[in-house]
Length: 359
Image 1 (cartoon, rainbow, N blue to C red):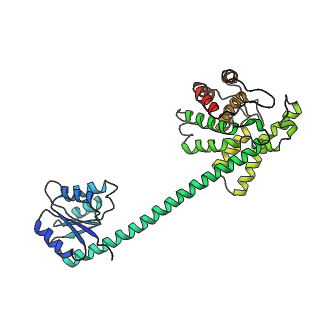
Image 2 (cartoon, rainbow, N blue to C red):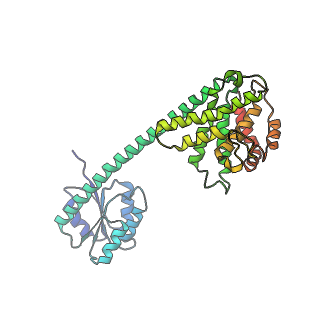
């Protein structure tokens, strides 16, 4: 058996309450109160489906009651029908602007009252069904988005690991540099220069793209990539190609997608340009200053710092303080001076990451 809908009747005249209750009691569950304050109390304690609300009442009138209800999310969807002897266009307009769904003029006509109640309860039922469906769909979309995000993260890590398997001594380099980039981007996002550029979505793109900075190393021969000593000029030219190989691989993925994607665009920038230097002496294009994308300038600081403090086939790990001293020497030549200054001011935070994820 379908549960009866609950109608709250609010009128300061007890005869009116009795009259309306008599009309609707056989079809609906009726709650009747004589004041606006009592109406709000009843709504707070009961599941009310619709309200028949007198306009002219002492202390708290109907307009004040509906203002209160519409200002609270848990009550704002309850339909309100005004009952009033006020028949001016201005009065009706005021009520509708406040959120009323209908007006019924006094004296009340029982057939009109029942018809209006039925109509607005059916409307509310339809709206509730749509809202529940929308809430369900939104929840499903959120679940799917989270699943896709996790899948993306796993895919990125798998791709990045392709390069790392060629160089076993890099260990947690991917994870550390990823966290360095996110931390530094978050720090500078508070600065006026970057407030409009670095929102949470952009920082997240930097964070997710950072592991792909050396993906191009899969194309470098082992005799160059794993050489336990200084590279010759010719070998270094071969090593430089990893930036182009990485960009091309990501570009191929973007072409397969068939559309531009902000994450892949950032990944291309980081992979292609993270060996560019502030003074224009880097590679592969010799970009200078802010010609170098911000993502790549951040990556350069993260990558070099981690390379210095990590063991490689061609060198031992360096102490943090010595690495910082070398980083300072690169201010304005290798590194964006403003970004490096922010890095140096918070160097202990980067050191903490390096220790938490040390090899």
